[in-house]
Amino acid sequence: MALKPIITLPDRRLRVKSEPVAAVDDGVRALLDDMLETMYEAPGIGLAAIQVAVPRRIIVIDLARRDDDQASGDPLFLVNPEILWASEETSSYEEGCLSIPEYREEVFRPAKVKVGFLDRLGKRQEIDTGGLLATCIQHEIDHLNGVLFIDHISRLKRERILKKFNKTAKRVSQDYGAATGH
Ligand code: NI
Image 1 (cartoon, rainbow, N blue to C red):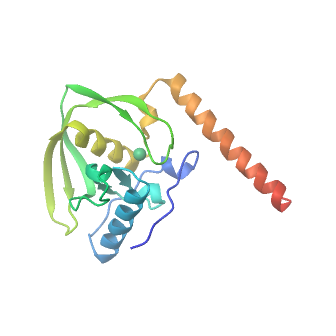
Image 2 (image 1 turned 30 degrees about the horizontal axis):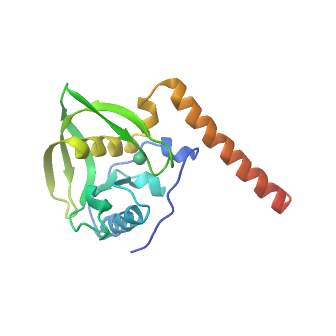
């Protein structure tokens, strides 16, 4: 297993629509393992492949990462996940994202969802879920479509966050330019 760098705003790859996986093979399983290790290390509770710059429809989730004992031993691996049903009832969580570090905002989403996906062995599975897991799955599936949680908040708040990241990126590249003479 290997840690992979997590891309952050304003990296444009976060807006890419990821491609479906044709078959869950050893290469995909190796990526799942790397993603899980990267997510635990960050630490986070969910990670989409595009966040490690791989534009494929792959997600890892482990809500129990807060335990001292890093791995809960029961992570969820979702390949080609699809929301098959979503409740009209909504709920809200204060969401964050490893690709938008240090920002959290309240986001409303369907409270319950039914999700179809391929598991680590390529077997078709369905889960019905609510609570934080429903929120997390929806947040990660959004990533596969180039959507970020800040797209669900007010435009004013979103623009404030985007501005902050654009400014930081500019400063970093200016510093780099000054240091290297470019
Ligand atoms: Ni995220």
